Length: 404
Image (tube, rainbow, N blue to C red; front, side, top):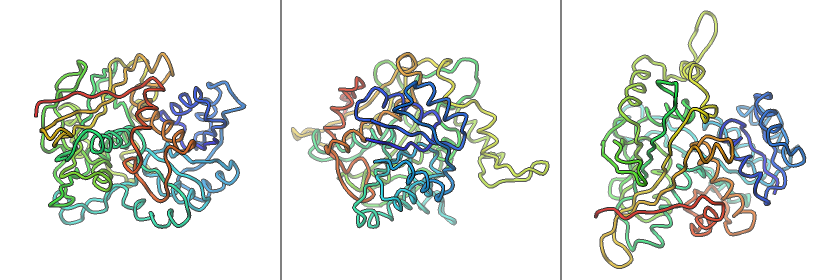
């Protein structure tokens, strides 16, 4: 297949490095507004017959559309920050091409009651276009990173294979990663991190529907497997809470990060100072968004792999009644060691774990193991082929039974 990847940052570069080892990818075109960056990524791959570099402004739907029509890919993979989703998503529909992304369109808090009611929810703009994509006979597979993405596949697998009924699905993310030489250095896009951590977290309950809480609410200690150990986890806004209830029968869905008190304090300080804002302000005659300034002042997460040690764990905690009729509590998870991904792919663990999942999804779509039309989440597809492909690639998931 031929794939156009819009965005050649850490995740886009990691996707290309993984795809290079997979025979299904005949041609991969990487495009970015930063021409030096995209040409550097392609040159590093050393296969000009399979990998090419292009320039594109992801904020301009017309520019994206022009590139799609010139490249004529089988699929467009959006590897940009979610603020660019709408123009890329729109261009893919107009060009009549399969679309995938790893994070969905941004939310807007409720104007009067932000910590009680949702306003515009994550992905709502995309999900509202389901019929348009369906009528066009096209697929937009949204949220197919690691979280959302692999975590959603875990939820679908548990509900269909491991449980007869599900009470709660809780995505739990933790790590023991350490970055040498930095007091504060996020392992993923700080722009996106600020967005999801400082927005009102979303919770879904069957009887209540969607509701929101204060940021960092409902702290709990979760003991992550394989020696990562107990971490304090808090509610964070994330797409799984929107996606899972649409396709998985359960009573409650939550998402919690093991952020750590220091990380939370930094984010709270950014909020207090207004440095999380996205509207530009005047700085000595220049218009600068405070959040863009924060992002520019911090190290690029894609460049931190050499200084990083430890592992990252993404997983889904499912509680309910097992297929044997007994109460069951299971954590399905995926751990990646930064040493392994740096040695094998030259990518740090967090971006590599994210990029792995669209590789798997594209292969399954290409061979017909997954198929569909409309705007669909990962839960809408059979989970077993996905999990089997992870194992075949050499990155299998695991599970552990927890006390009921």
